[in-house]
Length: 335
Image 1 (cartoon, one colour):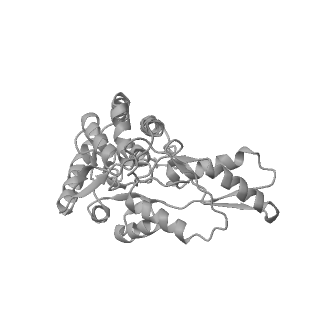
Image 2 (cartoon, helix red, strand yellow; image 1 turned 90 degrees about the vertical axis):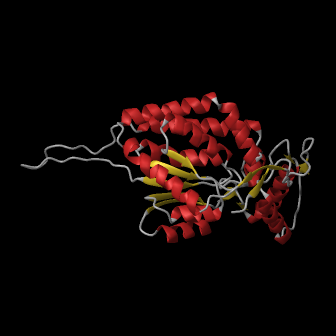
Image 3 (cartoon, helix red, strand yellow; image 1 turned 60 degrees about the horizontal axis):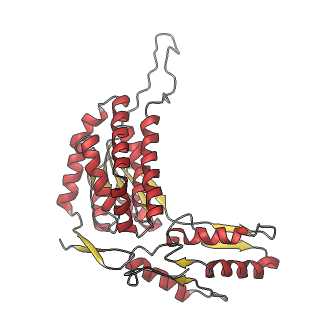
């Protein structure tokens, strides 16, 4: 199987190479998770909680390593990457506590000669397939509840951002046990193979087209989907002055690569010209580099350029690209 070059989004230079997981690697990953399932599921909630907290502690001790790996794959600033790593640790900490809460419906003696019992059991091996825009945080959202409930997980990171997933799996092997969390770096073909493998559930975050493909391949197995798409923002004439800067900030956060980015603005016809001008003014003041990072990969650059080229906008206003030394070859685009 051929290797793929992984580039640094800020410089455009090759930083490492990835050999996507094929049938043998997928089978090995799922087998390892299946082998670890009985031991992990058999632990008490208290013990699983303690082990998850040990993983959280290790993440926080190795914070700088996680930050640099997240930066390398995503091109985010140190500040944004650090915040996301800490949020990821906090998600795992939350579920480590939640698993010990008594949320089971009450059991007891309801009818003569009858006693009711409620028993929660893990689903089994969960395939978690996550995107590149928030690699570690998206993984934590899937891993936290799955691991806390006693499932084992095969984590398939996006092709361009496997860095933190691999490190997390190494640390999970130390704290949770071998095979409880397995990282499976690869491309879309790797993900398709994983969905069709011997897993019991699939948690997928990505595009609508990707979600439909997952559903088709998963058959009757349980599927959790978080699919791409964003909403419009409504700006009324009495909106405060800071609303326009806030909207532009939301549009350019993570270089616009977020489902929370408002892709459209709706306003009253009587307020149209003012809204357009103030949004254009705010966007013109945003600088790629100091204010937001690069696009993630060449495919994103091509998509961005196509959207701009095909736009029928009557008003165009671009900000500056003000990148650092050695970053001119990165995947930068202005607001």
